[in-house]
Length: 75
Ligand SMILES: [Zn+2]
Image (cartoon, rainbow, N blue to C red; front, top):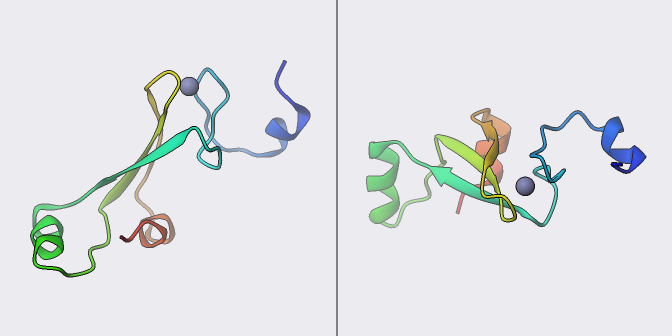
């Protein structure tokens, strides 16, 4: 059984119950070609997309491309 607080959040989870707020969630940044080049030149690049992968089962359970999430994952 999943803990009750999980049902209160509407975040996507994998089959282990990991959501993107968990420690087990690894964010993977994806850049556009131009964004990757800019980062190579030492610029700050906002990722085009952030994938959240579970370290336990290895699946990507959430893909975010909204501005707020992308800005939160600027290196
Ligand atoms: Zn998992």
